[in-house]
Amino acid sequence: IATDGSGGAFSSDPRLRRCGWGFVVLDGAGQEVCSGRGPLLGWRQTVPLAELAAVRALLDVTTGPIQVYIDSKVVVKGIHRGASWRHTHNAYQWEEFWKALGDRSLEAIKIKAHTSESAVVRAGGTALAWKANALADELAEEAAREAQLDPDLIAEVRRLDAETAEIQSHLLAMGLEVAKNAPALYGPSSSYQ
Image (tube, rainbow, N blue to C red; front, side, top):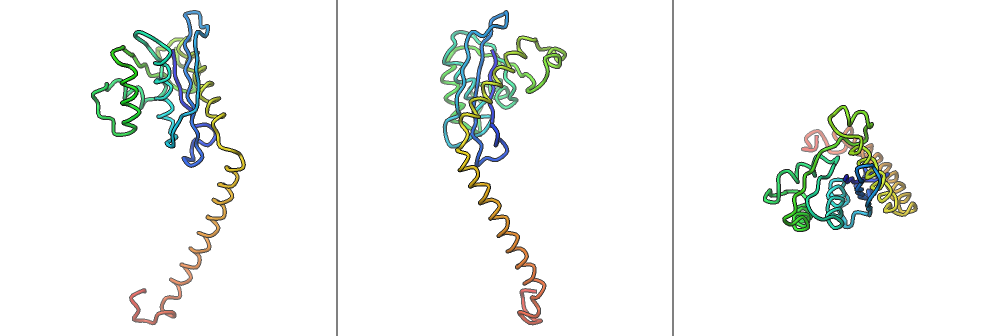
C-alpha cells in the first residue's frame, strides 16, 4: 500500500499550484487491488496537504491495521508523533486524519520518492513497495494535472507578472535617479541626503 501527493506542473508557484493525491493497494503478486486519486480540496494547495489527503482517503477504503509506504517525510513524521502531538501546520487536517484513523493501527514507512527500483531495494525496501509508490505517484500526478487552472487564466497571471516586473523596474530606475539628484532637488541641508 502506498500513497502520494503532487503539486502538478506549477508546484513552485503557490498562486497557480493545484495539487492532487493518489493511493494504491497491491496484492502480494503486485496486482492492483484498489486505487484512488483526486484533487486536493480547499484554498491551501500544498504538497504535504495532498500527501496527507491521500492517506486520509486510503483510510476510507480499508479496514483493520494498515502498513503504508509514504514518500513524504512530513507526513511520516506526523504519523509517528501520534494523535497527541500538537501539529502547528495544517492542524485541522491532522485532527480529521486522526478521527478517521480512530483506534486502527497505521504503520507509516518512509520510502524515497522518484527513485529506481534498485535504489529502493538497496536501501532495504522491496520491489513491491517501489511499484506501489510509483503507481501512487502516477495517480497523484494525474489528479494534479486534471485539477490545474484554466490555461487562459495561467496565461493572464504570467502576463500580469511580466507587466508588474516592468513597472517595478521602471519605478526602481526612477527612485535611483531621484536619489542621485537629491542634493540638486532638495538642497545641501536636506534630510533626504
